[in-house]
Every structure is written in C-alpha cells, then in structure tokens.
Length: 147
Image (cartoon, rainbow, N blue to C red; front, top):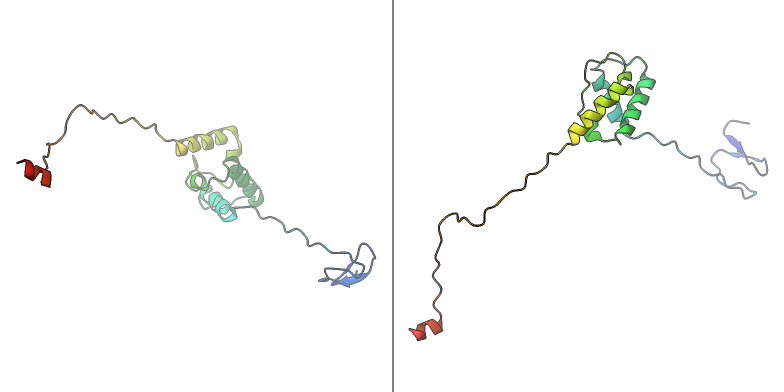
C-alpha cells in the first residue's frame, strides 16, 4: 500500500489517509486513543523516594510494581506521598510485593487513617459559673401609672 493512502474495506479503493468517508459510503472510524495510566508523575516520585534517589535496576518492572501498590490503596495520594520505606531499598522495590512488605504498607495505611475516638464532653448543668447579672427593665407606661 502506498504511503499516505488507505484502502476501503468494502470497495478496496485507495483513498487518502485523512479521508473520513469513502465514495461507496463507508465511514472510517477514528482509532481509539490509548488511555494513559493515571498519576504517572506521582508514581515516578514514589519510586524515586522509596529507592532513596538511586536508579532502579529494571525501570519497567519497578513501575509495574508501583502501579500495583497504587491500585492496592485506591490511588490514595495523601498516604502514598507520605509513606517511607522501612529500611534502605537498593535498586528495587520488590520488597513491597512480599508478605512482609504488604503487611508493612497495610499497617502504615491503618496508622495514617486512624482517628482516635472522641470522648464525650460532660457538662454539669447543676453548678453555676460566674455571677448573676441583673438588668434593669425599661419602665413602661403601665409601670409609671401603677406607681
């Protein structure tokens, strides 16, 4: 097929690459764009922070590991941007795929989201606090006539 041309599947006619409708009536549908994975920048920063600034041994595998970790915690950026590794990781973050690594991350996630129970405040309504204030009433016409 010549460069810059495409063929119509129904009539096999050669058309220009940008033609959207063939003379026979066939409509070319646009190709579906590939969806990018969300939070690429955040995943890259997470990997860099976990490795302490050193370069990963296998970048593709490490990014897939980070994607799995992000999926495990529903892309919770508040937690994932603040969590720190338990020890210095050298060249790989495969540790987080092990049982101990997953337990460490889940424990840190629970600590991060923990909210202590609020104690009920007890107010004693029987005791008085402060002094009583007496306000003078404004004198009405009826009060004036009754005196």
